Image (cartoon, rainbow, N blue to C red):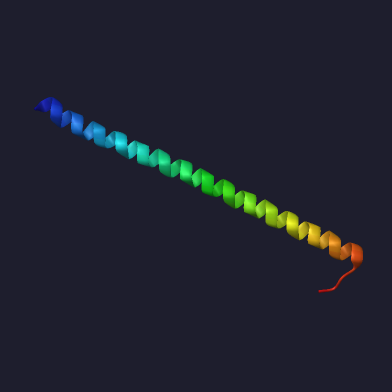
Length: 59
């Protein structure tokens, strides 16, 4: 009985740590996606700026 009582919380802790790991990996993925989008948008703006400068287009 004592063993069972010890086993249940440890299993609970295990699933909790798995959830935390999943959350952390999800956060990492999301932050990478945000960085990627930011870089892409920066590049796009940069190219638009160069394009406008080269052809002196006023928008």
